[in-house]
Image 1 (cartoon, one colour):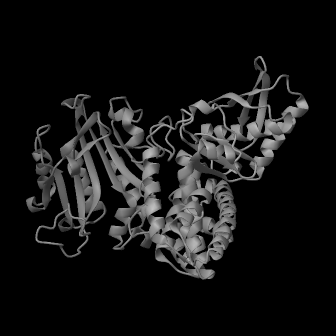
Image 2 (cartoon, rainbow, N blue to C red):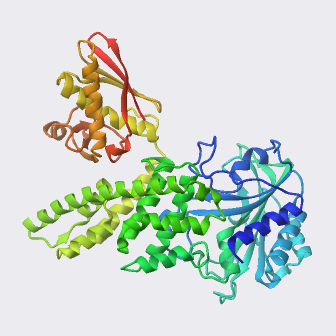
Image 3 (cartoon, helix red, strand yellow):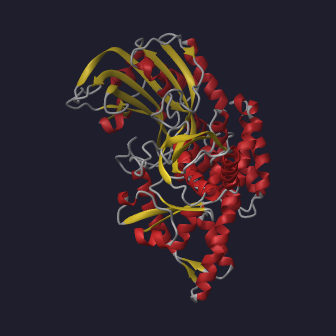
Length: 584
């Protein structure tokens, strides 16, 4: 049974049971700044689960496009996906446990034809907050699941809540027995041995967790369910992985034909990331250096890296996009409608990445020459990591180039530095940046970088006396105050604008080094408000154009900034002028 047949069976089944079919919400959430992407079917329905009336009534069903970012680096194995489709049905204060379980059992056994002996279920075991969910267990027995295949687990496995406070309750999960041998005499759905695969989850929202941690009964009981389409398709087709189903198989085969160096993990990464990228772009996402734009950039660049690794000509990317859209357009007609913009965005980002690789290759040559002078035949991990972090240069390409020139690489040191970098990145995403940039998002970071270009351009046009006296950045514009005794002429304003845009067009790398304040001064870095600096400072260098002490953050290349436009030049105070500018 194909994926689209499973989806249609699901929607039609619940439609015949009084549910209204609602469209999938876009991958990019509307009016929800708390998350980067839609990650679950219930996410767009939270207001209605909290009691707001849904225009389509109390019984709903849909398929929901979802993207989860926490497993990007795991893609390449036999099961992880970033993009997936979740089938769901909801009761908003209508039916509850018995009817929900009866419908789930009927759909699995009658519509999908899964033998009852293949099914096991789990229920909430109970604790001091809520009792053992005997009602759900009895409903399963009544439906047809024997008692020996009903298991009880605690809150970690069979309880659902979004966040620390709000509607919550026990859930029941359905598991498919793959037929693989049991790992032990006590093998059960909680095992990770692969015998049991979770296929569906029904959440019964009957409690509300208060701020002080108390669980109170809800007046409106809701049911929220989720069934993963790719996983169900794989199981019903008897395949080992989602990549063996019709969703991925044609693109996997094409990659195998094109590859000069075949690698199954690389083919999976390309196939998965290509689909995910197309879905995000189709729903309005664009690559950038922050938040969801950064995720999309990472997907496209990781895909490009692995095409490179398999020695597939990157000019094939357009043909691969066309093939994938043709494979998926029946399931997602929006891909066909957005075919040209999808191709444009992915290919442009791939081309930017190729420039990044070109920058990295130059730096690699410097590292090789340095090693030769020092009579070394190993490229150290610090160098590999710097190439990766500063220039986005993939470590596997460093390894290939090193091998071609008879050098080895210290991969163990790189792995250590990379893990430390990942940990810092995770921690950093939870903290605010210092240095006057209170709000970290794509626009403010771009504007912050643009102030460095503006500062240097003003000194070129007006003279070294034009020093920064202050700045203010919002997501809408930058405001920059600088010392200058008179109003700028129209020609001077135009010249400053042209210089900044020329540096953007050059797509200069933005790099950062930590050093003492004294070292920073000796290096020629511009320093402002020196009393605010500590013993060590960050120096941001923008290609061969600008070097400045700053707390950051910044984009990685100036080409990401867009077009710079000065909107206003005016007096700020005696001897100080003010520029207001935008990026578009």
